[in-house]
Length: 483
Image 1: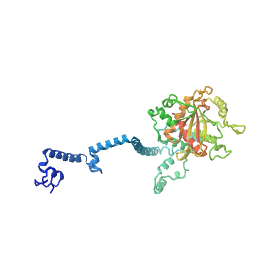
Image 2: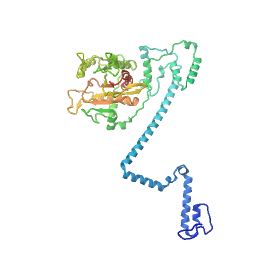
Image 3: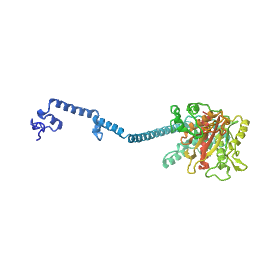
Image 4: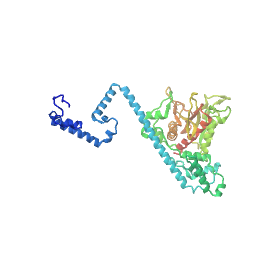
């Protein structure tokens, strides 16, 4: 039996002995006023009402008291006081939370991209099955003429992810369908294929798709997957543009008027493709540049060999006629001398351009020089691939201002050319490009509006890594020239 410490009365003098605490309290005699009974009744009703409306919030939560309004108010107040007393620690916590949320968003985006790529792949296989009957009678060809004829059926600007099924043969379609994940399924597929094949078809040689055609198919099926924001609104931010795309040499400077993303992207740099006449001039101001595994005296192991491969790609894969100049502008009397290489190259190139007025694109292909512990390599289409950097001259130095003795009427065209190629790389090969380096002089970029200096890899790359880089470079070049 309990005694009320306030009134000194017996707590159950009225003879009620309820099992529920609150109900018992309500019936403790005169000490409990009618007002208190009303308040307690309302509290009980409110409690059960909350349980009825939001059972998940109370029952499923580990700490029910965290759902109470008073606790939430105190919690917010404590957080505010913490922020006011220790802003540095609070900022660090916010930064960590932001990083975690960013990683979560990136993971979700990757999952969405994977689902989209899977859907596109399934759609491509379905299209291949639809045209199987049309491609049944196509005979294989590995001649250059056959390749060019095949290329004429390929759409230059295919929609991302749509394979060019017009030039696929029946055997290739069957090969695409043989992609089970287990060996047992592979054997079963091969067995079924043999049953369906006519005896006359078995006697035919296996169909071979030329390597050049395979490269075109791979290029057209590349999915854009940019790692940075390429929206016009974001690119309009000069600081963002500089941080993501450009590197400015300490001897020169630039401004938002010169580097306006909308204007650079808006310039029309397309050309009318004509394989009957030369349209691209490729040369090497520093023809003796070699790589980490280059064999001494082997021209194919130098930047010239890389240029040979680029010439082949542009001619066979994309239908351009290329003049490849292999003159050694950096050799003087049998000795390496790069001090005047640009001066030697200029008049020689002007002579070629005068003889071939159809040339609209001029490419000076180099390799960069970096510290020996730096390796400029990424992976593209399963191949180790050297990274590239574009190089532009502004004919302007901080010390002298405009270099009137090195005029270049095509500075803005050159910048647009480099930026449009880097913009394509940012969409389709986001790990491929290193940036656009802006230097103070001219570097013979005044010869044509579409003139560019390319640094492909460096001396620490292998010959094959740099040759592999010519495949994505040829692709982004063609995308710009063909819009």
